[in-house]
Length: 178
Image (tube, rainbow, N blue to C red; front, top):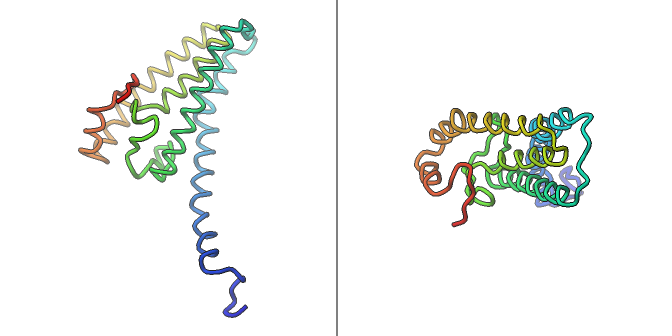
């Protein structure tokens, strides 16, 4: 081996170096997921449901399974899109660099929030606890305010006419299929 190389071809060294940013992006997305949606959609609902009996009726369990699956799948799809296409995370301090208009974002502008609400709704149904339904309403209201007062103005400034066009064709909260 000459020139002090590690015995790897230039292509292999390049691939190893390019993995660093990918690994960091995955770790940042994982950390955000555990801290923010994890707290809002898992830790707090379970805290609010402490002492409540979980439903055992097959229909309720089926609804819960559907809501959990919808929420978790939707959230993971959004995080993947944010990372793979936008090269960012859901965290405002490391937001995607490109406007995401594919995947669930083709049908609704805020699928990540809807995914989190779906998981909270699943907890509310499985525990049939009034405090969880109230919490679901509160979180939905907070999400709406964050979107309208913070996120949409920021995205309009950042992406301009591209975002305006997107808003004209995709609804904020009610999914539709084009």
